[in-house]
Image (cartoon, rainbow, N blue to C red; front, side):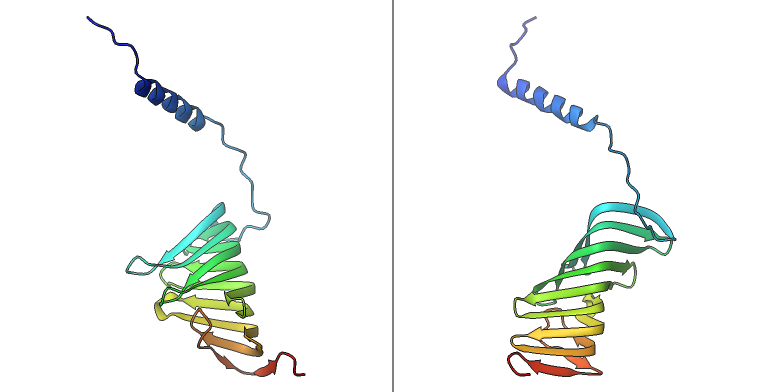
Length: 182
């Protein structure tokens, strides 16, 4: 019987296996609890990423959150959410909010509290609440809505637009101002 000397490849494989096993055997850090978990939460995950796709598998929205909770209705609530909405034409717009709520089956994302959508440096909107419906390529904002496009600032109670804010309709209490004219 002949014994072979170990090759560089087999030594490397053994070292990688040992490192992988050592990494897997580390103790888990202690779990942290959310300071105010939703009353109906069944599951809470901290430091996570949520992605919504359409029926064709295209990413329509992506959010990162400090934590999220899932309740018995399969509603996901994300705290301090920030990420992107993707319009039907592929345009991505940045979004952030105090809270995002996704209800499984409804296919929409509701953003609540200090919501900001930035389509470009000179095209953005802020409101207290926005709902994004990817299937309709529709963004609806309510509560202290401000839309900024170039030098124009428009405030209203409601905004209906596609996510890139190129075709926006503002309703109820509309006020328009042009920068440099007051």
